[in-house]
Image (cartoon, rainbow, N blue to C red; front, side, top):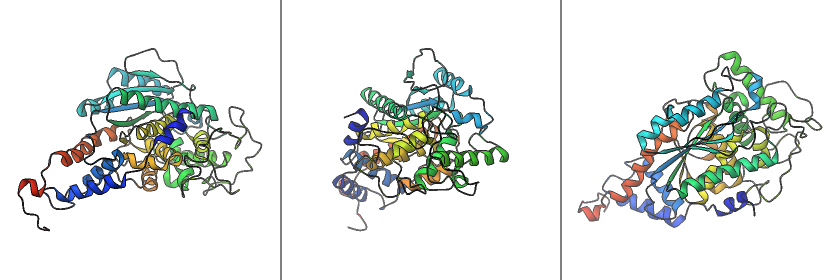
Length: 405
């Protein structure tokens, strides 16, 4: 078995007995039932994932920022130059980014992973070089990645999760950096949810109306040329994709994956997770990810899978993490039981992704930065939810009368 196959096979759904025990314990604590709202749901979720109640405290936390560049940048989907990716990697490593400040506030470690930056980075403390390629191909003219590249990026993310857990992390937080990566995110969300590009494509770093309209059409074009659902939308009809070649010379729609994961981690895709283009062909999740994802999306998907396989909860950040989680869930549906949605970003596609995953965000502050910032802000809430399970007295132990006794 490959590393990816081993990881998917190790993921277990939430344990029913632990879920029931956690709900019963919540109801026995010295507070009105349900008084902690969503925090009670979080504690129960983590108990189910860990298969024990109360669940382990999700600390310390480790943030992994996966960085990569995108060939679709050439389509003018953002005013920011591509070199900002490598510059921001330097900023992370120097401790000067918002993510660094938030990580210091919550006591999380920061690891930066070069999975596809379009430049060579010098060795530095806190940097892991797992470069699969110098950025992706342009997803609007063909597959962004080859079959080999998407698996390599997924397994790079798995390796980072394993390393951080080996180092003592008991909660993983997703982070990202990649100029133009919200374009790839929108395409992934369209492909996995069936939403129209106009409904899930946002302004990213704050583009104007003209650039947003171009971005929407680029997403539709990417879906059309790669034979994925959502490419028609309200845009112009495209000619047949068969026989066309992507930027790497690979025929569009001809991605080939070996092993048992091309059609889903359990021998088939869960309802609603597979793409179905007009020709009726179910699109395997790895093919979707390779066609319109980014190297950091694939690595984050692997990171989420890796954490789940090890029984460590993963706090998802914004729209990049949400779109990557859709791919992870298509490969292993039970992975969702191990995830917490840290926040809901201002990007419209993020709400669509979370709704499809069935996850409720803990924080909604109109954030649209990425880097792992929303996930880091949510970490103290997740810890507080679990600490209640460990430290709050029950009605019986405290000698307090329960109104429902």
